[in-house]
Length: 145
Image (tube, rainbow, N blue to C red; front, side, top):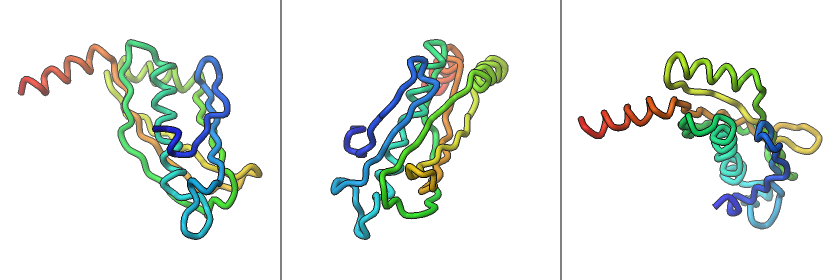
């Protein structure tokens, strides 16, 4: 499915802390006015943070995409690029919060830009991160009620 967004993963650090994508302007994603269709820009960013966090956090956690919003700043008339990055401090903070609260919502922005840094759009992703044992118990309680 990701291929249909026209997004291309161009770089993944072995520890998944940084992922870079490119969305080339092509006949497959041009809109009526010749720029990259907003849906392609949005869809190409959709799974990245969630997949990163699943890999980074490990098997003791549950990660889901919860919501997203997009703010278009200017038409994407050239290839678009995005960097998805977590720092070790962010990961430790998340693990600490989940240990205390059992589940959290993490809000993280990503910017789609031209090669020279002009922002085409800003996307804000909200991810749900939970302790796996807590999540399973919560799910079981919901299904029993």
